[in-house]
Image 1: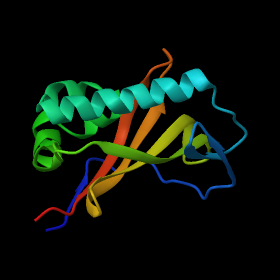
Image 2 (image 1 turned 180 degrees about the vertical axis):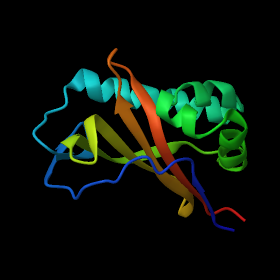
Image 3 (image 1 turned 30 degrees about the vertical axis):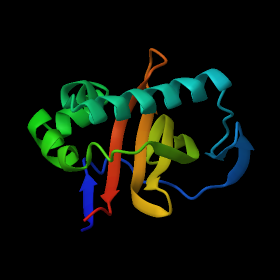
Length: 152
């Protein structure tokens, strides 16, 4: 069964204009911007914390990582209903690509799309993306997520 989970359509993504690889993960950049290794580490740390909270079934922690804009648009109950069924894939997720968006017309600031998938052997179980927004304090807040569950 395929389930699509979309928590909020809060931004429109522009086409990718620059691509390069760093640390074995495909990275792309839209706009005049070069992410630091610390920024990349912080974003991947937020991603790992989000996934760990989902896998533990701690949806309150996962929801707490959302930006204020997402929490205004989606209640905790809506968030739990959306991500709960696909929270634990029982196998580790793998980051496929990072796409950085900086000062684009549809959204100011710095935003990062983390494309991921999870598989068991040769079987693809699911995938999706997380959209993180760089906050004023240097942390990343979840702005949007999309998850596809291919398990039956």
